[in-house]
Amino acid sequence: MTTPGSEVRGRARRIAANQDRSLLADLRAVVPAFVAARVLIALGWLMASAVAHRYYGRQPTQLSEGLIAWDGTWYRDIATLGYERLPLEGLRFFPLFPMLGRLFGSLFGVRADVALVALANVAAVGTAVLARRIVRAEMTAGDRKADDVANRAVWAITLFPSAFVLAWAYAESLLLCFAMGALLLARRGKWRWAAVLAAAAALCRPVGIALAPALAVEAVRTWRGSPPIGRLARVVAVFAPIGALGSYLGWVGTAFGDWTLPFGIQGELRGEVIDPASRVLRGFGDLLGPERFGDGLHIPFAVAFVMLTVVTFRRWPACYGVYAVVVLVMALSAANLNSLERYALNAFPLAMTLAVLARTTRLERLGLAICGCGLFSLSALAFGAVYVP
View 1 (tube, one colour):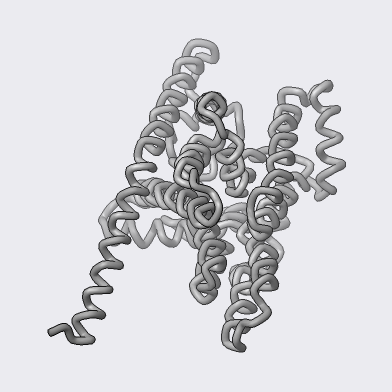
View 2 (cartoon, rainbow, N blue to C red; view 1 turned 90 degrees about the vertical axis):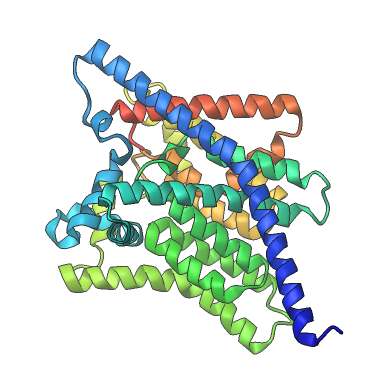
């Protein structure tokens, strides 16, 4: 005789088994791309090492620092020493990633830099899994080839030219996990968890604030017919990243006397804030002037990212397009376009759009080849201290 309790337990076991199978399928799709990306990054390091010794007669600091180069050293020092014992420039690096690095380093008895690199790489796996799940969730209703596109999305985001930072001690992979999770949960109507992840994203990187308008678009779309508690959850989710950002700035104001320091310091490094259209137009002039090997080199990427953003609005629900365009506007609003490609990686719907556009086997192979070459080249240039990630 079957009792109600045994039926519930049986249903729970079936759900757990289905989730396990789904996770295994995700990992089977993710692991080859994950390994391929790290092989290309290792080759980039070898290339930078060979070129540096042969042509410059010295080894850039970034080569010896390896996976904690550039911003990774700041995250390591924040995790080890705290903000108070560092120059004020450290305040532009938001706290959640180094705090988790310190926590996991203590739990597992490893140095903070090792913990940060491990955390970034684990989160990179989560990023690829979430990319696959988002594509499948958004396409299963009307496209029988959703699995193919989802698998291409895994490769697109893992081999994105600036995705070498997902293997470094950078906060990008953790930000992407939280941002992708927040939008996926919001689309599924799980607004409370979406609020938690959106707040966490804003504590990883300032671009996490782009989730506020994206979640607002989704909240408005589903507002009608929602019960009062559901509407309240939507409002909380929309304001969660704003509140998280405000909490960090409030702490900075209390501890250092000026809550604007993180943005003021960042502004000194990236220059005046200008409108994106003017910056892109000025960039075409950079291509022909003394900055052709500086900011001018970012302009082809900028044009490609703008085009992908336009297609994103046509191919995906509006919340993804809004998130992508806000992140891209933030990146293109600075006089200094350093790290533009990394900002575009934060706009993860662009990688999903790349996966949709690669409809044929030929286009897929061409796209992966271009992305792989870009990943290898940018990682080599970053290890060689030529490119600022």
